[in-house]
Image (cartoon, rainbow, N blue to C red; front, side):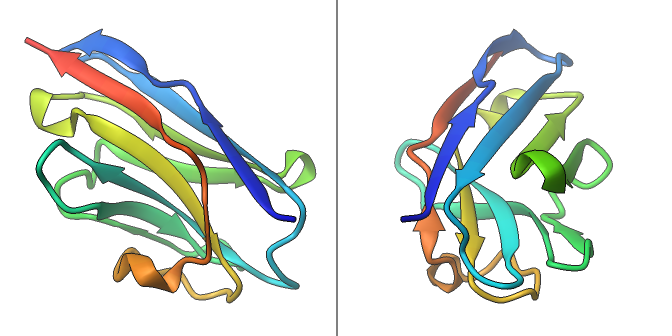
Length: 124
C-alpha cells in the first residue's frame, strides 16, 4: 500500500518562505516520478512542480525561480522549498506519485497516488 503524508504547511506573510515535505511509504514502482500540486478554493487542482525518476524537474510558470522541488531517496521524502510567497500561492498543497519515471505536472490524472494535503496560507 502506497501512502504519502505531507507536512510543513502553515501561514506566512507575503515574501515569506515555507518548506513542504512528503514522506512516501510503500513503493509506487521500480521508477517513479513525484509532483506537487495545489488547489485553491473554487479552482481546479493545478501542477506546481515535478521531479522524474532520474531527477529531471519541471515547474509551473507561476512558481519558476521561487519554488524548488527535491527528493531525498534515502528517506523516501519529497520536498518543496517555497520562497517569495504571495497571496496567489494560498492553496491546499498535495504531493503525488506516479508509476513511471517521466516528470509531468499535467494532467493530474497521470498520478496514481495522492496525499491528504497540507494548507498554505499567505497573507498580506
